[in-house]
Image 1 (cartoon, rainbow, N blue to C red):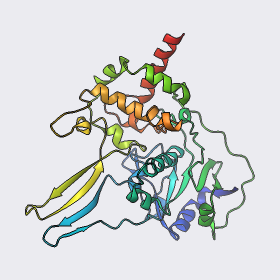
Image 2 (cartoon, rainbow, N blue to C red):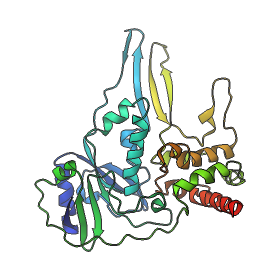
Image 3 (cartoon, rainbow, N blue to C red):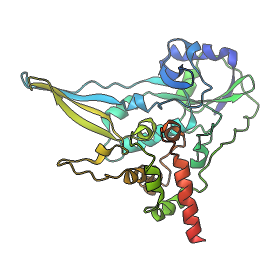
Image 4 (tube, helix red, strand yellow):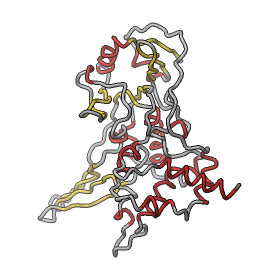
Length: 337
């Protein structure tokens, strides 16, 4: 693993160097306080020091809406859109978002591999960047420090006057070819502290959540929840979707479309005949938290929440997943004491 020094004055030149090789997606400022990943046209528009983007890079591998097939009964044809590898560089990705992609990889490889997602992932290289945790971040509690390089090909550690740039994979080393950089001999700066925490490891959460299945916290939080589904839509590890067929007015042409769906929405569990399996908002709240810290985690041993804080930061009702989990922990400890 090689480590180089990238001074701030050369960052735009470095971005231009990446652009000469692949399409580059990076954070851009959107309005006063919002940031979003977008294709880079001008290197000077890229923002590497930001709290979080509205959405993660998931949207490029699993679009919010996509056509799966189209059909024409007149011509008796059925066609699938061509899905191509992105073969792009994702620059300025925080550690939790890089690991969220790895979790999506697991979801879409396990069982029946998801062709569209896995095709888009091909050739995608990730350049991570360190960040200063704000009051919503808690990725340190789920084992993802701000400077964690897992899932990245290159990583930019903020340091005095620039960045310590680590080349982590052959793909990352290839991106640096032709761009001279001095070696970085100094150590890495100490990571900034997190302001909120989940106070138990995942191994204990398995029992905590099982004990808290009938906790009063679900009803109490549900009283505030509007079931808007924003927490699902901004989550970098949520991957549920709905599939719907549509036809034109002649009923001879149509398409099948996939779009993001969310377990906080009442319609998510609605089936033919109008039956809704999680009718009550409290049941939907519980399901969301269990999806992040129990159901998949029981199989993998890892939390399926990456601690980005988007769900809490975006919640119009001020519901905090950290507060919910910590209350369950306190209730569990009180009983076991």
